[in-house]
View 1 (cartoon, one colour):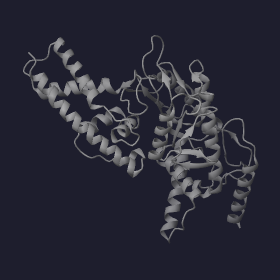
View 2: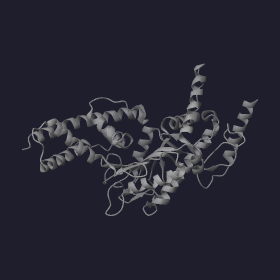
View 3: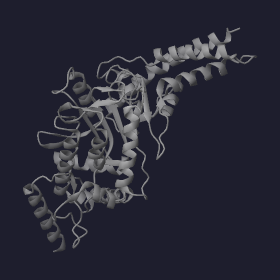
View 4: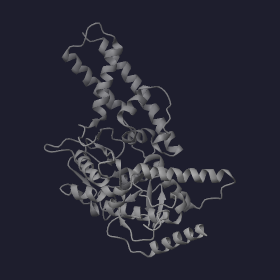
Length: 417
């Protein structure tokens, strides 16, 4: 009888959710105070409020228990074929459980000039990562969303769609209300050193950065990774901070207020330092850290310094380099790494895929991968098998180029007098 009452209440909640008008701000369902084990049909509360009240570790623990329960149940007999919607719901639950949030891709198109490449690359990224999006009124994996009226509107529609979907399969969440935060957010658009074209109707975010971040933050995990596939947003302007660094600092403040002092908050924001292709541009710089931001991790600068040091080490010189010699070696190393990091712009080209994924992997890991002639396990990136194969193929290209450039630079260092 209790089980029947639970099913009846879940069905009632689903029906009422379908009739309820959309709230002004994003919302997440939370348990009814009279029946905490069930997804509630009571009025929804704001996303920020629920996320502050729900610790991410508790959320993952609840999801883990739900998934374990399903696994044990299915071992007893053949599992029935899951309907497509349930498969989507299961994937969302799995992403939150395993990675602390979902992956989302957005882009500008109709309201921006020369934006067809943004759409192509965003769709490929979404397909490779099975990013969660809304298409034709349904929540679907492998879907990138166009920014039209504003990024916050995209994220609100997605969150509402996900919550409506989870209402139909409450057993996936142990009949609990849970937030579905975004762990990876990829934005494909135009940019500059102090601005980004991602506002309502593709307006530029510049002086409006703070309200733009405030509107986005309630949908993000405590430590999100925001990837700005946009020109120059990580480049140093004449005055002030690069757009990506300023965005990271504002996200830090917003997420600290949202999650409270008991949750570790550490957002990352990545972008290009100079103009270039949407995803094949290897002039990447990422900003991370806690309350105090790092100076930024620059892919080209770090790989230049490490290549120079490795070449000097392998040259086994009897005498140390003089300062002018060291400068010449570093200049040679910079040019060498520019040759290493060249990528073809085709959306499925292996070198393009690898460069695109550097923010996901981090510079330290990328360096280890390129300098180690082996085929690594890349399954933690959450990409499809086909995309992972392209990524590894691109890695092999960069491994070969790096080995060649290291040999050349080592020979150059040996010949310095």
